[in-house]
Amino acid sequence: MSGDLPAGGVPLAGFGSFYAGGRQVRVEGQPIARIQFTPTVDFDWDPNGLFHIEQAYVQWFVPIDRRHDRPVVLLHGGGFTGAMWEATPDGRPGWLQNFLAEGYPVYVVDNVERGRAGWCPFPTLWPGPPILRSAEEAWSLFRIGAAEHFAQRRPFDPQRFPIAAFDEMIRGSVPRFPRQTDDAAVLALGAVLARIGRPAALLAHSQGGEIALRTALDAPERIAALVLVESSGFPEDGARVGFPVLQVVGDHLDATPLWGDLSARYRAFAADLVRQGTRSDAWFLAERGVRGNSHMPMMDDNSAEIAGAIAHWLRAI
Image (cartoon, rainbow, N blue to C red; front, side, top):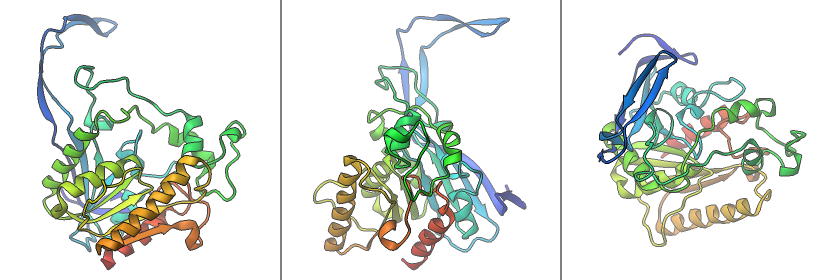
């Protein structure tokens, strides 16, 4: 597919989509149920048969002004889908558009159980139940404000997340399993990278960092660089990392004990990479004079500047 197709003002040479990975399973012994499709149509639904589950869905975009062969692969965090990269909650271009404007081909992943990757309804295959994050939990966990200030929507000072668009962000939340599908997600992301077929810059957020890191360690030949944005995953002791790693971390890390612990682990991970002789950069943005970033820097008011800094880092490695 080709033509002058815009994505947030970025003309495209082409775009498309594909599924990658997953497995086929056969379900047997389930009762047939009478279901109603519409008020006038009902149907005997047979849940038995052959199904394909645990695949990833990917959209890819290539800008006309393509200046880099290395693609950027964007992986969502927990409770979100690839839509989180498309635009900010207050309507500015998202990191998908920012990296296209930098001249990179971009691949946006909906990994196992999220968005257009699909959902498995059989509890014997995906043990449940899934969880869905509340607005109150997101407010404090994402370091937008103190838990006791949620009702007043009073954020931390300074705060770069667009507070007026907080509810719009929550509309993008989806159910997810805490850990049960992690192994499947690693396999699916590996299949995505294999389908792309050339080393990629893999950029992952939060829980996606765990999936991305495990996948990268399984297939380092497919990784040109790993960018971890407030990741919640770290390698096992003794793991060797053979590709450049950038960690991006926001502000207000003293907001909860969880973030204090993660902050210490980010620093320890960066130091361990240096000891291995691996290119390692850890941007604690507040220490670099950039105050107020939340757990969601791709949505904060300086999201384009952070994307530009990451693109500059990628060009330099």
